[in-house]
Image (cartoon, rainbow, N blue to C red; front, side, top):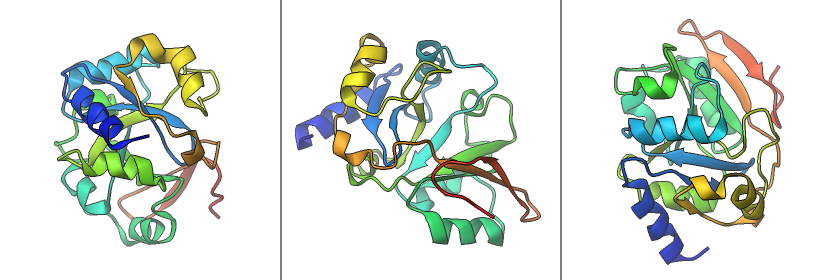
Length: 196
């Protein structure tokens, strides 16, 4: 991956329906700008994704998430301190700044800071510092772990593929934990992180 690749990826994201693929620390992902509903719907269509499954916000830092979530309880902050950046997705109550196309009617939004320097470089070039994302695959199929797999499965539907196979180190989806307003933590999916 080169600097021009990063700028090409950012340019494609500016299109109203712009969707790109990129490496994360867990698997390859696909994503778009959070304020581009046309691109969000394109992700659902290209994956054959259920209309009831929300997308995840990947961000460059915690401050990037502040417009999109209510003030988190202490238990959520402790999880962030311990596991971010890394393969833990935290689900929290959302604000009205999160487009309904992302959350599909849920009052919450899922967030993660990836432990992936290449992706963090990309997120740093986006004014919001955040992308609406999901794994790069056809729904129900294993997530893609290489750029070649992404190209084979989704290539003709994407605007750009940011390549860096070496960045994908976990090779399994993130753990997902929901944190209730009272601080209760519920594990919704166990990935490479096991929470008690």
